[in-house]
Image (cartoon, rainbow, N blue to C red; front, side, top):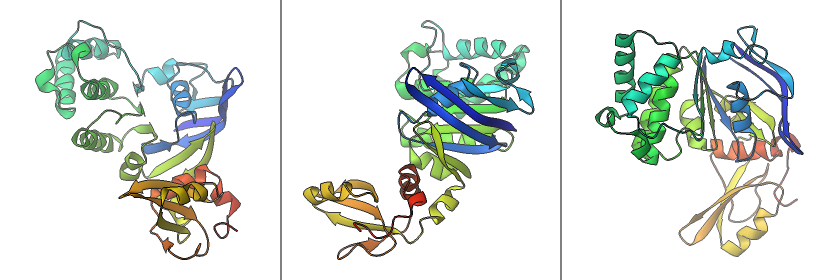
Length: 297
């Protein structure tokens, strides 16, 4: 078990983490939040790249703040941004990283590297310099290096950024296969990634965990309370000023707006099937705890 107990981290006046606590078992855990919510700070702290100001983190009972090698020896990590050696091929660089991770048997390294390159659809580009890869190819390489050495804990931060739909699905399938035996933390602001993959998740905002549970459980808390309406752009501005506004999207010359309300907001509003995006916005904005009644009331 990975146990995170009341950790905090500040950078000057900015409280990037504020009393975060989570207990994680093997499986896929989704961490949703907007940019600046503190997700990357949490990931870097769990990866032992920085220490929390307070609180504890243990992996199977071992304090990874006091003994970071307890995490590093079993960790696979894909940060948002990572550098590569400018004149090394993908195969050579993966071989180098595998040695650093303790995979000393050459035949075992070669087999593992080939398998991973196949999984991320880079086998035909194995001899090319990683520095020449496109953004999507480099992201796929990052996935491969994170999985080297069969890590016990896998942390991936915004992993599907830059991937086309087919690449994204291939990556999600790969994560799903790995989740049976690993603790996998998927940090993202892309709601579909969590919806499609995770059975457990949390919503993070302003450095805090504001909601935790299965996606279906978070959705159930606002079941029957989401209403949608297509309005003109000018009307959408006024609706967005209300406390129980959830989200909006442009569609065919108008704007589809969603609000949280226990009763019909009025003419033209239709009760909608609740999706994870609705639950995400409701929890992030504190609307579930506040139990907002009728829209505009």
